[in-house]
Amino acid sequence: MHDESSPSWGMRGLRKWLGTAPETRDELLKLVQDSRRFLEPDTVAMLEGVLDLPATKIREVMTPRTSMISLQEDDELLDILHVLVESAHSRFPVFSSDQPDNVVGILLAKDLLPFLTEPNTKVDIRALMRQPLFVPESARSDQVLRMLKNTQTHIAIVIDEYGTTSGLVTLEDILEEIVGEIEDEHDKIDEEAQYIIPDEDPKTANTWIVQALTPIEHFNDVLSSEFSDDEVETVGGLLLQEIGLVSDLEGQVVEIDNWEFTILEADSRTIHLIRAKRK
Image (cartoon, rainbow, N blue to C red; front, top):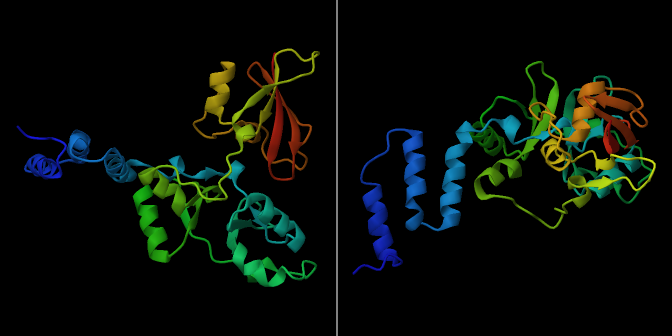
C-alpha cells in the first residue's frame, strides 16, 4: 500500500501527470491545479500566479492616479520631506509644473540624503530625478515585469491611450500577483481607508463619513449602492472623475444618482475625506 504523503510517491505521481504534455495554457493551468495532491498549496498558488500573468493587464495591477503619492518638479525641500515622512515610500513620481497630467521623472528618497542636514537649502529636484519608465495600460504584466528586470527599475508610470498618466506600477505589485501580499515594516494598512463611518450628527440622517481611498466595491457592499468601478477604483476617484480637475476641491458638492457627496478634506491634488448622503 502506497503512502501518498511520502516524497518519493509524490514525485512518481507528478512525473505521471507530466507524462502527457499540455498543448494549451488552459491545459497547463488545469494540470497545475490537479497537482495539488503532489505539491504544497503555496507552490500551486505561485504557479497559478505565474501562468495568470500573461492574461493580466497592467491596469488591473497598477495604483490609480488618484491614489498615487507624488511630487511636483517645483516643490520645496521641506514640502518634499513632509511627503517622504508621511508616506514612508522610497520612490516618487514627479509631475510637471506646466503639464500637471504628465510625469517628468522619478525621485529616489536616498538622493535627498545629502540635503537632510540643511533642510532650508534650495533643492532643484529636476537635477536629482531619474528618467521614468512608461508603459501602456494594455501591457501584459509579464511583459512589464521583464522590462523592470531588464532596466533594473522598481517603478513604471502607466499611461492611457492619450499619453496621460493613469497610474503607476511597482515591481512589488507584480510580484504580489505571484506570491501574494508582501508586507514590510512600512506597510501599515490604513484601516480608516477601508471603513465607512455613520455621521454622528443627529441632524444628518442617511449620512456617512467616508475615506476617499475606500474602494467603490466596498462602498457598494456596505451601502447597497451600484457605482461602477470599471474606470476608477475608489470613492475619491469617482468624484474626481465626475468634477475633473479644479483648483479648490475642499467644499465641493457632487451629486451622482441619488447620492450627494461633500468633500470635507482635500489638498490641491487629492481628496482625503468625504461626507456621503443618500437622498
